[in-house]
Image (cartoon, rainbow, N blue to C red; front, side):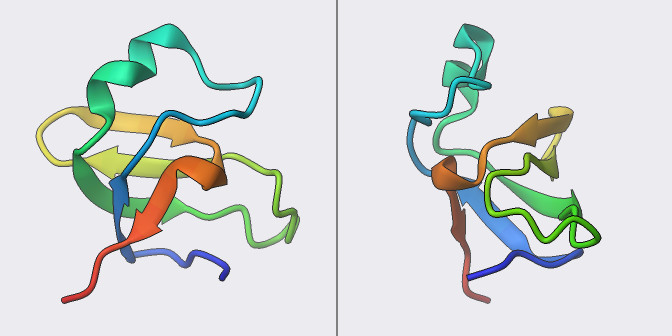
Length: 70
């Protein structure tokens, strides 16, 4: 499922992607809003820019993201 701008997501696990960095471990379980889904590339391996609640904006691999309902 492709992510879209403004969608609420949760960092639900540590990614297996090589772009995952150790400092990202602290964000597992947090939620935020997709600010740049890289839809122009339409690449399922592209990083997704997410603004985490009260933590700032980061780029995460898609395999660690989960859509949040509501």
